Length: 230
Image (tube, rainbow, N blue to C red):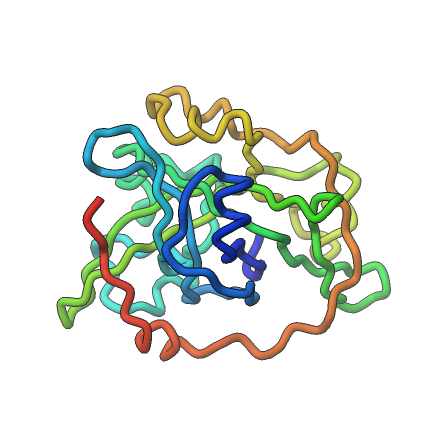
């Protein structure tokens, strides 16, 4: 599972590696659930083009009554995304997205305690994680975009086999081959599960700096990200 990661926020890297423009250009900062970060989805004008928007990390279903619900829905298991109430509407509507990341963070317990490790691609190359998204309207009428990352079982891969608490199931995010970004966003819903597989490309994991305290939910409120027309 991934609850903490570093998003791609620089406009030049978003364009070079993902082929989409980002209106803002910011230095990357680590993100936790309820934080705001860019994600890539299809424009809603029927053009088939991809666009970059900012959304809340933690998908909020229509029945969520508060932002804090997203603390439970930042990851969606590929085995159950089609049927769990929190995710199934977005899945059935084909509201899939790509979450562009510089690295993700996971705990390594080989020392007997949790040590924060960064998982990344060699050569400072960012990667795209398969996700789902939906819009959410808060009780006060404010509209937000929200998203979650998809995960699969991670038994076998050497990197993720060293991570997570002993005894817990090994899970990893679904990493999309860059050549298949468009296909992931556009394929019919019944074909999307073919992407639910372990990443075979190169990854490395290294001990990372200690995580600063996760930002409070108020930081999300202060920026008030609207749903922008496609």
